[in-house]
Image (cartoon, rainbow, N blue to C red; front, side):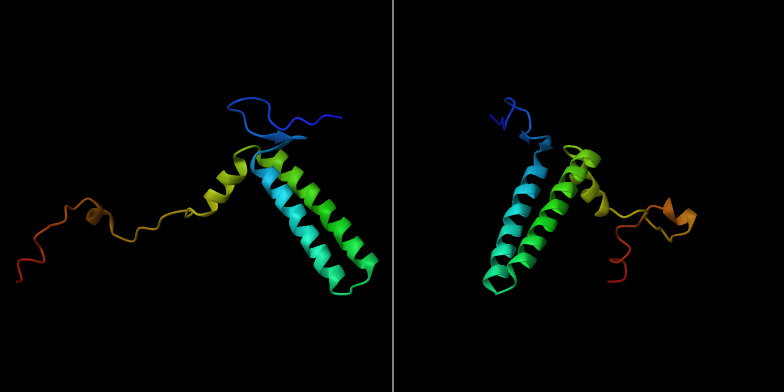
Length: 112
């Protein structure tokens, strides 16, 4: 069985259908789950509780990562996160004629 990681120059990294940033989410999530599993086991929790948590959390991670990959595509997740940083609408409370009035740059200097 041979797994291909990259398909060519200039194309994004892809593995089993996961593209670019989702590979990092997937790999980082599995690494984090492994560390949590080891810490739980070393803390003395029951072995079956640790295994059950590890398997269920890994299944949720796999399903969630592939779901995000299907829903947003290669760059869609970054666009969705960027969209959250922008305001929905801009409120301007000035009256309408004042919007078109030219500001006087010397207004504050006349009083000096």
